[in-house]
Length: 196
Image (cartoon, one colour):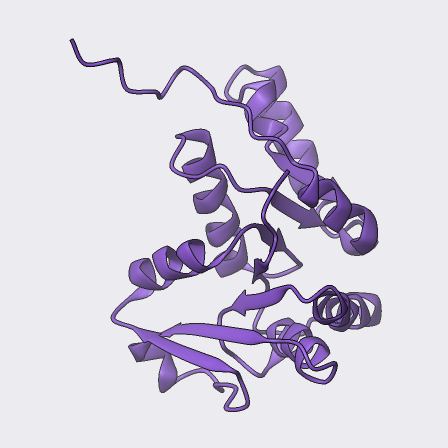
């Protein structure tokens, strides 16, 4: 069973043009607040990021924002968070978000969102963490990406057990329940040999 006292959400700083994505992102924040799960995210008050944060904050939940110093000038930072952590760079930001979180959920987004998802799932594949990684596939947003990943499995570039590290659901409640019951599987490929 996973310790899901906190969840890091990766998502876009744009809101896109799909009303369902916007409403489901706010709803995820609501549900995190109701379940007393702290939101860890990228600290913006705009786009999908802002929707999730408002969903938590307006329902008396806790939000921790993590942002690199150079983005303080470019992004609209949410000033109503419980905690705002400013890091030196993007790498330190991702390390801090990973340290603060018991699991991860990816919502729709662009390049940055995909980069965060693939880095955190690669860290899991390498055994650097054993936390659940969820993908909330709202309105089939990630159908094409999932088709690509399945093709990687077919072509033997991606092992089935590594593909299955990603918990994919369209329903928030089912996704959260699956993440709570996640049992990590220790893979042997990347384990260090016993010292003689």
